[in-house]
Length: 388
Image 1 (cartoon, rainbow, N blue to C red):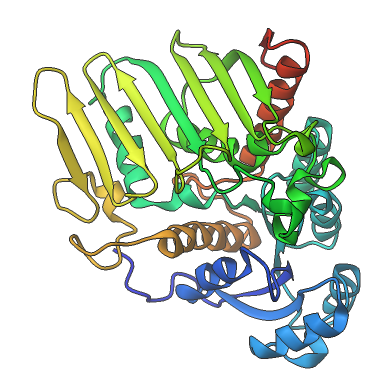
Image 2 (image 1 turned 45 degrees about the vertical axis):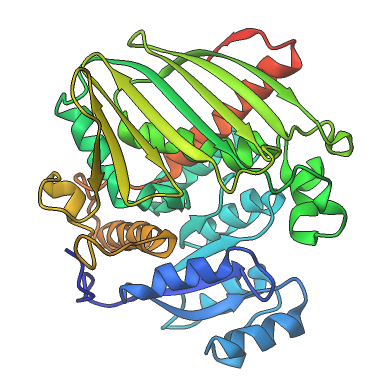
């Protein structure tokens, strides 16, 4: 159970690039990082407008001299300080991630990066090599994976409660962009611009979340080939898709589907994953993240609740307030930030955490690889492609 006592000898001196006033995700990063006293926010380049960024930084208690006009200046100036930053979170539009991540690694910093890590597998492999060369941790913020019941699902599958895995059904299909909302919303507008968002919209922005959750639950099966069809129902978004279906075949003979969409009119969030085995099935829905549906063939369906003693011990390790109380997205992100911090501290000691999973550089690479393969399939007439 997590009770707020320190896990690290000293908090990691931490900065942000982006995430300032008006950011959709900056506050979640800060709340997650600071909740368990594993990080200390000491610097930032919070905004493309330096004065606005400085004003914001001072309002989150960062010293004015450590509110920088851009990330390059920040990395250079912080390197001169004995108390300089050790890690940085990147919360900027997609098209900047690769450049900033590379610069941070070259500056000897640990990195926590919004997904996608970059636009191409080639870029992702370069960053992976650089991270290993520098012995730095790169974390990817697949924040939903931090919910406790994801760990319970992982343990149930590993211990054989479901039997042989046959089918994986995934979706992240909300309805908030069923019209061209980007015309009046700057934080959405860049997501449908290929120059900034990359080669996809909902595949990369939404689909990679349940994809990573499936990788956490099912670490021992890999995609062999896939087929993807994508559509732009709001025509102004073309060539980027606002809806896509992906079929997958795994190396153990299982099959999977993933529906990625922002035009599922009426749906609030619509992120679900159902894993079907030869004996039983489990289903997790992020609108009810504290529960996991467990259905054994021939028996009444069960609803497993977060924090209860009947769960596997591994799924109770990150419990904060015991069963019956609801936890949400901030706790999930905090769980991942705690894991990032522990991995960073171990790296600084020249060690590695072998018993602690987190979405690292490999997860970032796999997300980019999956999107590339989906786009390749869709743009060639929704054909089956070998997974490369």
